Image (cartoon, rainbow, N blue to C red; front, side, top):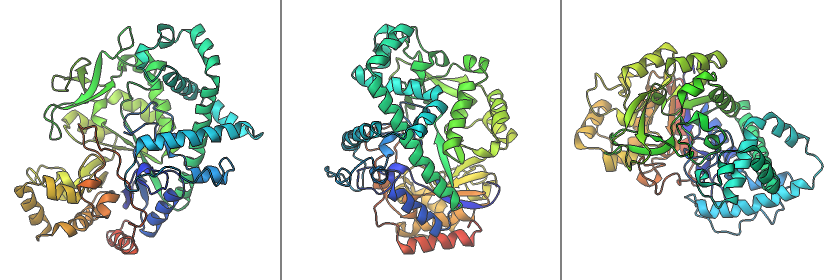
Length: 494
């Protein structure tokens, strides 16, 4: 990220596909071709871990989301027939229907596994299992157990299974062997498809930025496999959970509910779990965006019994010590930090000390004083990534029409030097982002298309209608490609 460049933010689930959800097949390759034509050099995606909706609420910090497997690519490998890849379900074209998708793909992937079992060529699969044993065994076992126990909270499983008693695990592992093997195989297929896609990107000069959430889900393999790394009770329930204090998104804060790390134990073990997690993500991505970076310096801890995050408290995180160890293993240029929200001086000091690229968002610029608001373009620095909006914001058009107060609009138009109609505003802000001194500009696909609030990806603090927006198959028009490519050239980012 030492050179000027630009890219597009679009999650895999939002790609066009006839299977109800974006996947790693033809739609993804077509999108890469769009990036090439538009002279973009980065593609940013959200977390790729397994989930039934939110990419930030996953059952594993290491595994891949097998809902993203492409039936068309599985057909090309001879693991599905042409008839089997014809959808029998009518899926919404512009939204992800997660229940329909899970039902349809679960049936397909069972067929794939059964067919694979009858093949003789398994050396690649066996090598994958061996190379990923440290996380794969626990994840596959956890996934099988969740289904076996009717998706009850794992802290409510039989005590000997909950507490990982050796003999009990050995017995039930034998009972669930088929399911465990299927989970491992599907991970093998996911990583095969993903690495083929990434290689296609890299061959054409495009790097992938991937997101790593700071926390793991309460219902994920990691707290079950490594309860000592989290602040849990003797019955394996969270004593405290993560969130953020009241802010502009929510008056009562955001209660995420994730278990909080026991940083003392992690430190004693040289942060080895985190090192392995980062290593896994750098195997997936060229650059990692560290979500909620400030949580490593100080995090908002809320009693697990609370209904909101309002009564939480700030607790000191591992801070500088963690990053010293981290950068002994990985170059700092492999990271971007998300430093949005309530950012204190100690957070800024760590970012500066390790020269980490920070984040700026134009939709946060036109409020407060221009001299002190770091999101105003004239306050940007070269070592940062500037976004028009993010997955947690409204789109440009939605923000302007639904959220912007009159004084914000006035500041915006004063900054632009003219009054701009809502239908043209997205290109004006894209131009503003492209002209920034920031080394990297990332534009969400929704803003490139000038879409309104209905295309918003996430509304923090809410649980409905999030993570469902999808790109239409014919929206990437030639005129949009030409306009984006021209702006990229004008501002030296091609």
